[in-house]
Image (cartoon, rainbow, N blue to C red; front, side, top):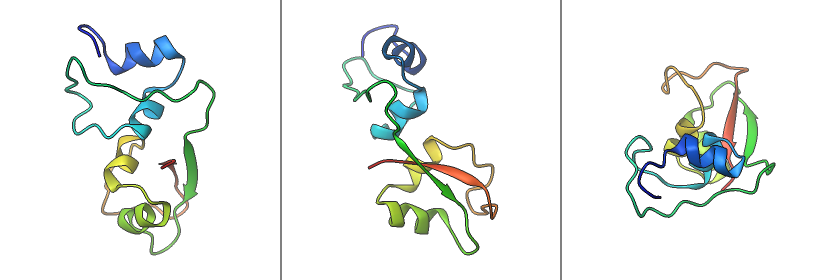
Length: 97
């Protein structure tokens, strides 16, 4: 990262989505990036997500374990209003690990 870089500007530069960048990088706080941070950038057009349809009894923890990713990684790429209560039938994106 260089001075003035944002996730949006980096995503546009490489032709990928911000969500795709977040999915493959473990950023403790995506809103506070530091100059000098090295980011992995997925190849443009690469599908970096798996779609999961929420089933009865699913929790973010159980889904994260099933796919080998962290709950934070799932939350980073989905707009989940209440992480403690998932809606059965909702489709969420799971970053590929």
